[in-house]
Image (cartoon, rainbow, N blue to C red):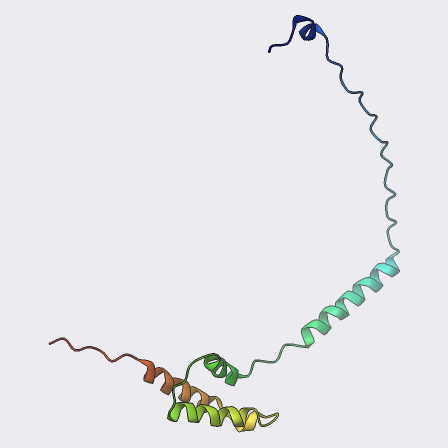
Amino acid sequence: MSKSDSEKAKPKSKPAAQAAPEKKPKPKAEKPSPEEAAAKEVAAAEAKEKAKAEPRPPADPRLKFLKKFHGKFLPRGPLRDRHKELMQRWDSGEDHGGVTADELKSLYQDWKTSREKPVKVKA
């Protein structure tokens, strides 16, 4: 199935080269006048100062402990009851019912200690 000698001898025609489109020079942007440049700098400085002047308020420290209970299992008993009371107070109003970070922290620590496995004593 090889090509015959006559096919091998034929010169292959190359596709015609297309002419490259002419590149048009880009018009250069005109330099702004000194007055316009100064106005832009002043506006940029004002925007920068405004961004610095409004720092983000710190997060509520109570949320740190509240998030630790999200989706966790609290078995029936005093811990679940304390948690329910705190959540009712938390949902009661804008100031979250006066729930303190210490209350949430103590509940979290008590819950952690109740989950610890007892240490096995080797005899």
